[in-house]
Length: 192
Image (tube, rainbow, N blue to C red):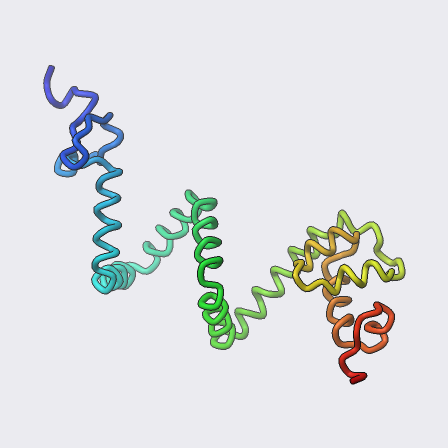
């Protein structure tokens, strides 16, 4: 059998025989499998962060639209994995992300406002089907749940059967309007 008709190849790094689809197509790159090559690249990036950043800047500068399209494609193909990585990084360094986000908002007020408005609109639309208490007077129990700042507004809205906007407004009132604070039975800081 000729070598171009084989169905496996030998990886010189891990020493295993693997199917051809575990290797890159170009014959020059068939000596190391994709998994080993990926590990090599990752190690090089970790050992050479400045050179890696400079290389990424050169690629982006050469063709910004192609770089953006490649990033969009990579994200679309790996959405869950990337989201999990972001969540893990955020949980490890929350202050770093908060300061970055805060700085970005300060430098891009119009974009930040537009993004916030779009997010709130999506949350409002998502909360409409479960808003069974729309138009009813707020109860003490609902105000107590709204005042729990550890829960996201979208979760509270779903729990109490209110829209996102109504819940967000009531949370604001619970902490800023003296009448609502008294009605909710919360301690009023202004009385001291």
